[in-house]
Image (cartoon, rainbow, N blue to C red):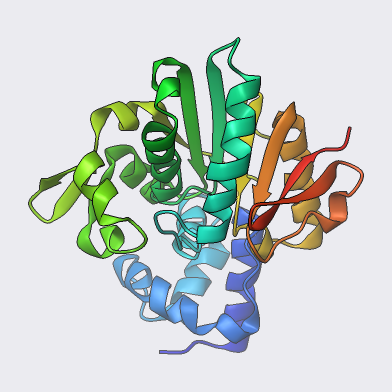
Length: 273
């Protein structure tokens, strides 16, 4: 049941304060879809009643859970084919060639959701660059939502997730079926680690990354938060590393930090300083 305009406004502000996710008024129906069951579990008669409960409490776990429920967790294997062609044909060959002496790779999948992007990179490395499987490779996936981080750690995916972007050849090669789920190969799972991070808060200690995948997340942030996140990405990017954004995203507010380059089928960024 729809709630009042003031309640929707409160929820939009709560979500932005907790996660930096900007939800426009055109998407108010999402609150009904995603919060009704939470409101019922909290003992509220409806969303308006739930909002009153939230207003009376200091910001805490319940407020964070609201923001987490409203996080957009859209993902798929090898999402955006042109981007992955560029990663496979341009970026990874360059990075691997530059790291042959160290035999070490560090890749960050920011806003990783349930882990398909990290798993896609792991499969790509194993399938196309088998020489690095003896290297020290870490693919670090981070997300603000604890529930999706926990799912990513299992390396298990349902049929509808498998059917989104995963070639049958790679399914057979890298997954084992367990009932209604498919589990990623253990060796590739061990290359990937997942942890909770809010991109708009001070980041914990992290390594310098050879490749940062910050895709399809900036468009949900305010300009100020986009700038903060891009500054953090720049600090964590190796001087000769690469940043990849979503197809509809640009580092337009950080031209002093990054320089754009077009290779293969899509744009990517290098550090300008």
